[in-house]
Image (cartoon, rainbow over all chains, first blue to last red; front, side):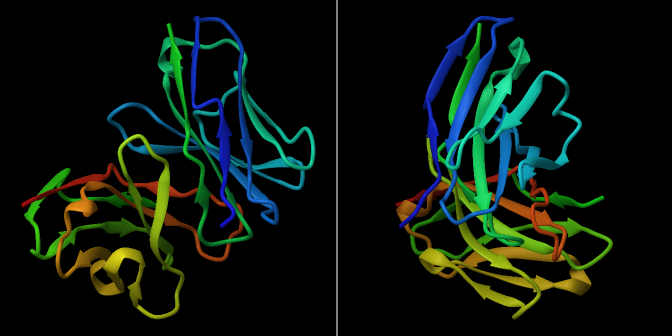
Length: 112
Length: 115
């Protein structure tokens, strides 16, 4: 069964460094998403992406964040200058259209 | 704006007992509703969804949920709990008929199952 994959599973970085989190969505899906879950808190929407542009973003998704689909399979989330409060589990998701979104296993980002 | 409230951050049941996890939503129009499950150190797995068809929705692993517009609820039930059901459960809402829209999650309910 097709699934969303994410790499790395765990990323440790120092405050102020740039990180890129990578995702491979399900191949026939058209909509891509990033969410994050700070430890012990609820899952929060960051951004959705369709047809090579952002279709919706939350107030969390500020100028420090960017997304890109560099090729036909990868979908990336970049954090330009990480802060301690960026430490969280980051989930990528994809969907065919409206309806259910399929989530990857997540990347745990630890900022020290 | 849409929102989801999950009543009870932690629910404990005995194996074989009824599971009831509560979810109430707020939306100006009937939304799409979802239940996801998260096992320790894993991602989110879709249990079931309501997308304006039948109000009683059956999902995987014996779970079901009923959409009640009058109560703005979408509670998750399972007649008989199994030890493997122990996990975190999230209710989520999204705008209907809008592709690429955000899922808004509740805070989650941790289900514990004792033998």
